[in-house]
Image 1 (spheres, rainbow, N blue to C red):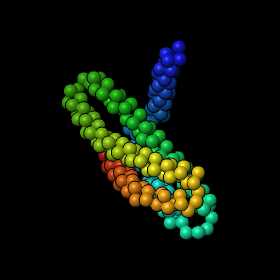
Image 2: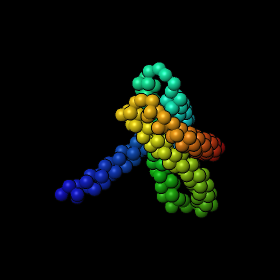
Image 3: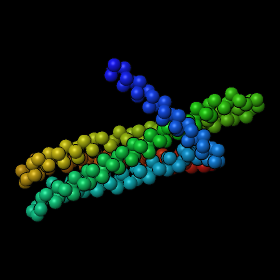
Image 4: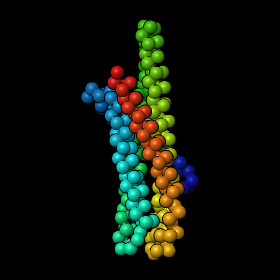
Length: 215
């Protein structure tokens, strides 16, 4: 019975969420806020989350460097700061994922509605113009979506490495443990560099998309 209920509950949750989103978009349109405006706002929010994430992951990297370069003092205090930066990094990653998901949701709603409304035209020239605009906007959005997805994909390698090292130190908080993880710095450094580059590309793509939507 449980095997049947779980998929049904998941489907019900999706249906409910979709209904809630549809009601939200409908309410906003009645207030004069179109889906394209919501989309621009959400792209900006995703952009802000990635910029904040860049800063946070750099902070975590610096804190990891201070751990592997530990040379006397309160090791527990150094570990606690690293653990705090890791927790903040996880929260930053969650915000980035949530903001990207929100962009994808409104994009689906906007493009579905736009596609459906093409059939309502009686003036074929206007229909063709609208269809061309739809294609151009969707193409630009697809570039943005790919950039955001690449950015999102680079989160896990950094988080996984940080988590492994934080967990290792938690149960082996001594000079020998510090020496053991010292070789991890190059890997984390490279992963953070890749993350920064992917986020920078997504942020730049967001700027181009927003400019097109506002033109």
